[in-house]
Length: 413
Length: 221
Image (cartoon, rainbow over all chains, first blue to last red; front, side, top):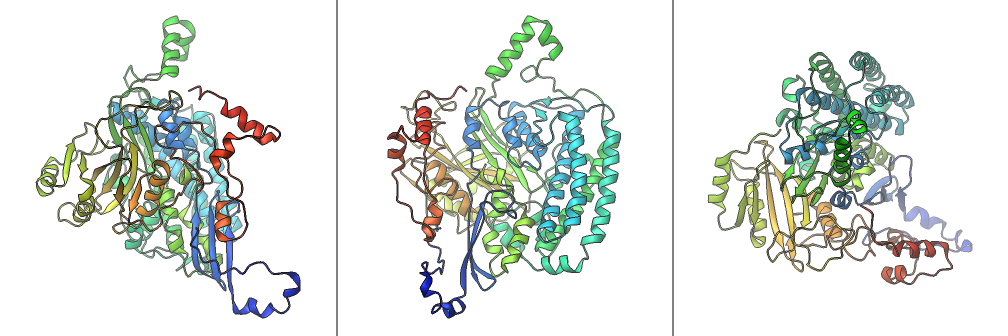
């Protein structure tokens, strides 16, 4: 930040204003500071732009306002105690983070989870994807003035949170998964309600597609804005919908199948332009693909247990804990001391809503991780924003920030 | 679960880059780990990035960890401390991904406490912030980095929090914004943050609170 050329003059005294008036027009450079508290940044981050007229000549972004030392906390909490922290990373897709974290620990321990659990996890990942995309395209449109889109989209998001609430008891910070299992099985009547919600999402977004995709104002504001080529995007390690909007056909769900994705049929939408409009199109298409995946999951959902048959990680049933001394002791020791994870290291990347989401855990035995690294997509998305907005109008900066979907929780960790 | 890493590829890398490789560790559950000598890491990464049959051209992640914490660390406020042995202090980790063959590889470099590591910004622009983050949290400097400053914490911060010898609860309080100050928008006198935490004025309510916290003996975890 120290070498930014602000072009700012030192503050002038009041009586100097009149004679200096023409200087304002001659030196039209100006420093605009967006954030850290600003309605359009959707989180605490700061972009300082040096403008020439309305065009951004140079910008510097600053992060760290939400830095809570998550990775350090991962080294002092037991493996189970860290699950609620994963909700606070990308709080728009908490379910996806839960799944990514427990899968990594299970990989270290060599635990195979039963098919019903695999399908439920795939299902909640896709729900998280739909919710995250609704937020991203909804808020992006809202920032540019399309309020109807935001309100109609958010209705479906609330419906999704009602479903999730019946699943795990809370709406936003879910902590649904457990190592080797889940906090509970699907509630009664869940799948029919899911079907109804999917119909609602599909109907709403078909309408919204008609409303916005060919809207003249929307297209004018977003087409050719914040353009990023495939080479640029790869140099900055961008992943997910933003990379696919730049014409790179990579999707870990299809290319490195995990969970139940190899049994499911879906397409990977790719766009060529790499601008804000294309990122919107890719996200919109992914909502429809996720609906398609979820419909197949509802049909295929297997029956059976949700817990892996492994004594090390199985949480004792409440009924037994309340009625037998041994189970109570087991339960107490399980949560107070944790369980040993064998030494080794694992990195288990998944295709999160924003891109590659993964935890890199180094274990040296014992109930706590030796090192827990969170590979969060937003960090990689925000870095190139300076390059994306160079030469754009100041009003388009908001469009670009919205389109890459920065979530401060996982940006700063 | 991920697919198995092809074994012939490991042998190929071993044969081709034998002089650069210190050690190869085959993980039971994950991709193989290659420990590369620090003076060869730039050559190795720029070569494996374009070589036929490898093409690990996508930097998925860059991070580090405290491999050998010093023997004299405080008792409380730390994670499990297990030393791996050896004369180095840190490991810098590169997670590479091949867009063509869709497989992964993990590269590690051992770095001593007072040593610098070569920067990868010429190869991947995205390494810029990642290396700044490693510098911020571990204190490893990268040679040839365009802007080696802190990224998460305040520029006036003292110490490197992710190191194992940094207590989990340690408060450093700063007044004003170093960013605004560097932009020339506001002026704030420079503080010595350590002095400020230690010499607390009991009259100020904020100071009182800081004083109370500093008396705590570590966390309850």
